Length: 387
Ligand SMILES: *Cc1c(COP(=O)(O)O)cnc(C)c1O
Image 1 (cartoon, rainbow, N blue to C red):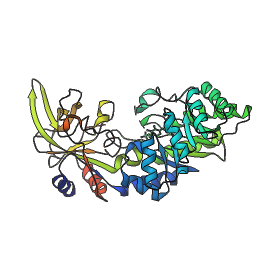
Image 2 (cartoon, rainbow, N blue to C red; image 1 turned 180 degrees about the vertical axis):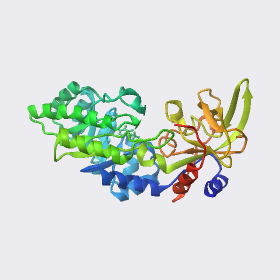
Image 3 (cartoon, helix red, strand yellow; image 1 turned 90 degrees about the horizontal axis):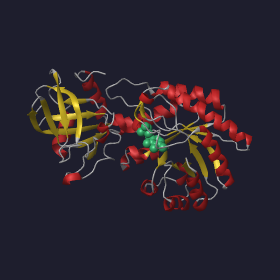
């Protein structure tokens, strides 16, 4: 882990180290395994220009959520036909901006969104997002309640879009981020097929299924391989939707998550009645935001890999009591001030969420090819929290 120590001392902590080789591999892995597939990278997971440039050059498409993301991609020379405006909650002025810049693909899950698009982006392609009925506990970061709608409402929306002069090309869903069960993709595709069939009744032939994101990253629990999820998607598309269907995947987490490692440093250790506390120089407001829901990162401490583990409360540096990552972190017993603490597989939804709260700067980002394969070898030999 010499490389990581060097980066920590050269750049200071906290620092997120990203390995583009891993991103490239993740991209190729998807394209090779899913039939008739187009990859739309969910930019919100990590919008660093180095990542966007790499994916641009690999031929990727992009799922964008705002004018800001569109502008960033346009400035990098990404053509508008490679972008899908996949946020179901868009400002009218942003839809207009997208349309004027050549984007013709929009997600909807409500009548009013269709009216907005029809008004300022006439004739555009739209797809309807359905909410999935996957098993509740399969995703660490659910995205079902706020987004998408029922199958019966989706049928109405397809009809309504057509009546408003738009072109309904297909459906989308998202099984929830960090989903551990491939069967959820099958269930969603089966439900989508009902809408495809009904739409034919009123003369709309749809040809696209957007399977969203949700593919997991290896944190603490074991995960299904991309190949296993791809197999379910391929089977379900063939069985329920047939041939000549374009399959869109929108990986965010699984494109960049395992390509990053966050290096933080302990700045205080204390004992409060029964609890041992460790405070780091990064926390919930500085990139480790997803710890407040169910994301359980793998954590190691530099130089203390062979030590017995103990329970700590692991907290960030800000003056806010929400800034606690875990109340039951399992870390080496002697962990203390100045130790480097590594958060593995933190390339997704970390730098994007980081703030400057309390005047504390967000983590720097450093790119270093090949670093992750070294980290993985190291990580295999380290005692960590059990699954
Ligand atoms: C966030 C998001 C994704 C990416 O999801 P992951 O679980 O990170 O892969 C894909 N599609 C849409 C519409 C999203 O909002």
